[in-house]
Length: 447
Image 1 (cartoon, helix red, strand yellow):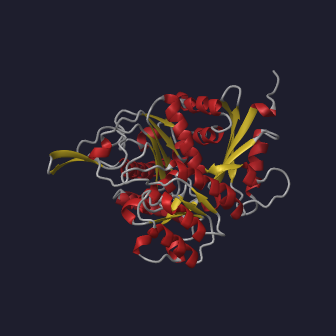
Image 2: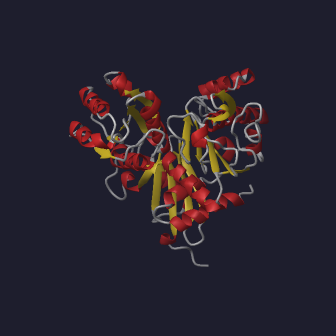
Image 3: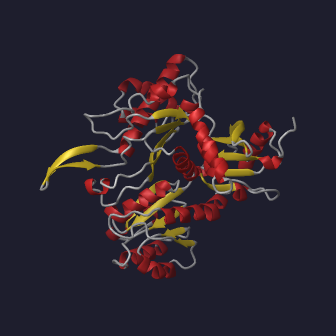
């Protein structure tokens, strides 16, 4: 049987902060034909780890598509008029763009200093509805320049103020996007999300100096986006391919991320009392919930004093791997707390309140009750014992009548053991049909 040509395959690589994962995809069959991982070689050159995966898979000469969260990932500071509307809207947009929000600054409260920005890679500057007050976002731009910020800025505020803002920021790397809040109650993240991705590729990846090679394909040329942004794209493709609302919960060492794609109920806009409307595509990052670095705050969030000792072992030694069933039980229990808290924060809750118009159902968060598919991810799930996903998610699925949490009630649960979603996100632009077919392979997971 003839071996496949190099142009019949693509290597999808996720260069993470700890491990570099490589998934070899056959473009003819839309199937994964190989997987390898290697510790991320952040101390030398990240391409050394990529090369190790290529060699392990015998994939020399195969085209490579990469995403990255190495070097701290994408750190975003959000500057908005005030905390309630534009700064909150900017925070949501930044999260959906694959960034870690390191600061949220309400410009209307006063001058901006570098300490307020918490050393981000990119500043997302928002503020004002289209046609509204333009002065605050212009003043915020002046504060950025005055405090010494010289990095990339994505401007996504009042369209009437854009020209003045760009003039103030002259000399800085600037990308203009459509206003994220063109009017009160409307959130439009897509333009800013694309602009942040552009900034990440043009200025952040190269600026981190993760690779210093001169010959061959450079790391900057290989990377298509920040890993969380690419994964969220994969979730969107999965939802479209399966015709189902989808939630992905990814339990990491330091954070637990939740991605969701749901059809919004038109009535939710009237029922919810959020000034910033919900969106169909949502990502949240819980920085206090994780398996290693954040293990202590995870068990605190779940009020699990019985897990405090196990959490200390893991936070003191993030490389810790359990070697017996008792240690694996503790890992699964900590993961269950992280998943439960992260899903509840993402989903929010519904409750009956009494107002001038009588009894009204008030909702917050993203209603996940009708979600048909939950994808579990993270090392504790990928490498866990059979049935680990059901034990970890046992307290996070099914109707929650008393608490009012809008959790998935009848969802199927699968584990993304082969980094399918990252590969789908990477393939979407150049090989959309392959990406769609590959996404559906998650439904055939039986391991």
